[in-house]
Image 1 (cartoon, rainbow over the protein chains, first blue to last red):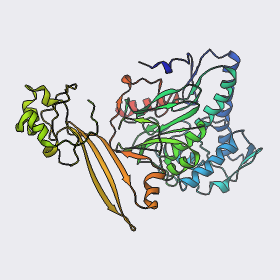
Image 2 (image 1 turned 45 degrees about the vertical axis):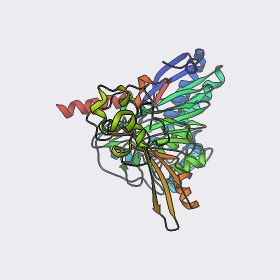
Image 3 (image 1 turned 90 degrees about the vertical axis):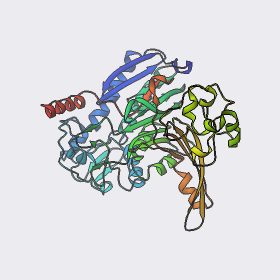
Image 4 (image 1 turned 60 degrees about the vertical axis):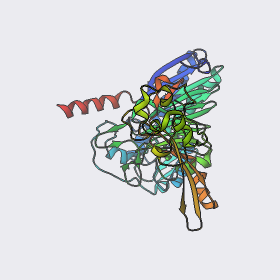
Length: 293
Length: 167
């Protein structure tokens, strides 16, 4: 049974967007205008950053448009990618889109593997951003999967929070942000969705999870690629990161698949847990997660 | 069943309580002697068969020992050391056994040099061996966090591939 601390948020709004399930819990139902504002934020973000829709800004850049008006999230996200690139020695790269497409994770969901393609290591020479222009020196496929969903969770919480009293949970399935009261959240076992490897309590913070078990297709292929090689990661099966905001937590959840992730988590003050593919579990110094070890 | 890291108990206590045979053939007397099947004790040696002692004073737990277990359930500790270029470091390893399965591993480092401390403690807080986890239905939680659920096109495409693969 759920403990009493889990009772408060009582109004649930559930919908599908950007290829996953969203649930927004509030103490009272959101006004229609707030829901419309949430839908607008998500739709705008999708039109800017989705490589799964041909009319998006990043697909225009992939087709060689050169420069576009800078989306409002560009600088924050790309600056975080600079830190991720440095911490993981190039394993995380925002131009990994073509590498994912080559493994079959493309806009048509073809899932036909055409082999490993490294992302351009010198992406910081090829991508330029300022407050008003986002420019590619030559066509390339931007993929912000390393932190994009976390960023969108932050944007949605920023719309919902001022519009309602009390506790708020924005849960985009795998990435969530909590305002107010403690949420007890089970850490799903990556090899058995009926089991949890532990429980964490999250209040006024974000929890982002990543695992290689669901966005996966044939021959051991899944959505977490090492940008340096274009090969899927093999050592880490699942990661969880708890930090002040969802974008940085999502970024750490991705970085934890690689060497250097724990160090960046330390720098950013993000708590974490991760499971290796042979079933061991590691956690950050001072982790408050209750782990069933 | 709760196992605490109790102070090691001399083997003669257990032997006196359940008899010499009981200490070494736990399963054999379990059916008739409920006191003998309750709890096993913490020891400081990694050889469970020789050093683990049934404790007749703790009777609240009633789980029966598996008759085909090779090792006696319990928690075992050992100290180990390894050499670094500058020093010899010591670590303490504690293992919990249940029906011949390792259910918990705790490693406590005692680094002598700051460099070792940095590697052991600065960025990684700890590590546990194979984690089985608990049934989510038994937990008091408000939600579950794992990989993103997929919806729409992804699921349809995977379903198509699967049906083609089996056609």
